[in-house]
Image 1: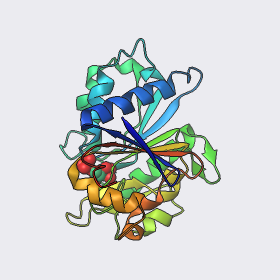
Image 2 (image 1 turned 90 degrees about the horizontal axis):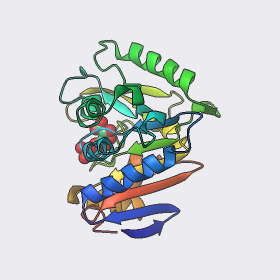
Image 3 (image 1 turned 120 degrees about the vertical axis):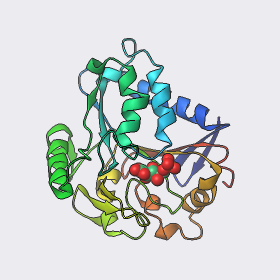
Image 4 (image 1 turned 135 degrees about the horizontal axis):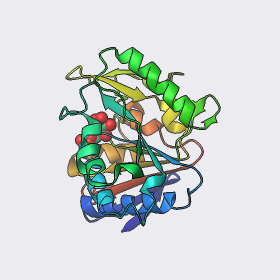
Length: 247
Ligand code: 6PG
């Protein structure tokens, strides 16, 4: 592992995506082992990258480890049925939840199958309000795991939907700029309120945008991912060599 620090952000670089995912899985288990009294609240990213993280977590023994201490939430979800291949929850279910004793997990998915997305946003916000501690007027996750789009989006906060970054709402409607796919996303203020934030970024396609964001170059000011690191805690980038090639 190569470690760097850029502007108070820790960068952890691994030879390949698998080793990056293994590191994050180990860190997540380590972070949660002392949460015997309460629950460790995690907001998961979507897309394809988290699949390898879930595979690695599925290899852990839930009896010996602390998967039972984790409350699983999502930073964003596509408004599709949970069995739809586009569903972020589906990947979590297929790669992890279906492989471990359900009694060890408390999963709070976004109901993508809900036709009224605004109604689901209201339901999810009430759930967050009931389960999570607050700081200021926003809920606090112990950990937010984020991905990075080549256009600099994160969660489902896209560059052409800047209002989601600064909204006072906790969760709101988003639309994929090309496909217009309807999504729900945690807003920038909620993401920034996390105790700790991890970007899990792999693949050469992300090398340019990751460099712009981390080195504050080029178009970084137009990228939502530039502005959602933990406000009070640590922001760590866990990357493979391909994504970190231009750092
Ligand atoms: C989503 C994600 C999104 C994702 C990036 C990277 O629901 O699509 O939350 O922010 O993390 O688009 O996606 P990949 O991991 O597929 O590259």
